[in-house]
Length: 318
Image (cartoon, rainbow, N blue to C red):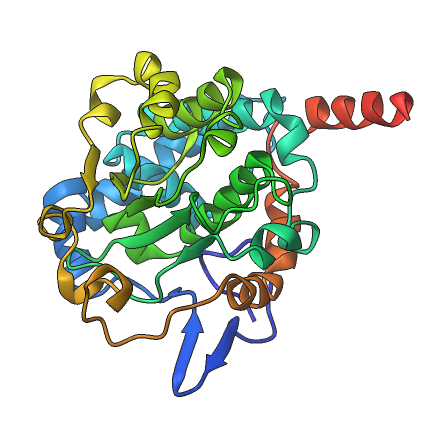
């Protein structure tokens, strides 16, 4: 079965059953709400969309080293939406997206859910099954008490985030409405804080600011102890205004959080009232595993020769 936003073919749409709830990726066309946001915020009309796709395709045809699914309109749209359908901006985003993968080939080479089971078993990384009041996906990272830093590295956390956001990029509704991220830092220790290094901070910031083809609409820090100031000091100097202004510190002030993410969209552990099951890391892993072929397809594109050069160098070192 061919799903427009996917690069691979599937026998059936990936989903898993959680009691009475079905956990799945939302690969359908835009909802009425999403269509309204697309028009009002992204300039998305059939005419602008068609013209932008053709202009972007023409730009990509001149890139001999860059391998992309040039005949796939839906693939083009996933980069055009965060750029408000300006083809030149989308073209530059595509270049940065794949250049980042080359620069950090140690993270991206053959990246797929089946190779990253540990991060999901640790259950510190999850996506809420529901969206927030503005139709945005909600990604939760718990890097305090639940994080056993000797068992799972920050590099693995990063890979898990990449896997989630690659999946989110398949959803038209998420392409338009974007995503928000919650960092729950409750119980962060000095030993955990020392795991954050300047190179890690730079990679995360470069990724979020320049290489993620998704609208990151807010980053919310909750339950942070004073030691978190040491961690944030690594990130602060390299943040540009746009991203810095989207980072909000809430501490334990839930009313502050609710101003950004509605109480009705949060689970009871955060004082919310959402009527949806709490999805465990291993359940997300089960769903992502059903999309393993999609990640294989994703890995076939980009600056392939440079990625293969890295693979060969890595093999020789062994």
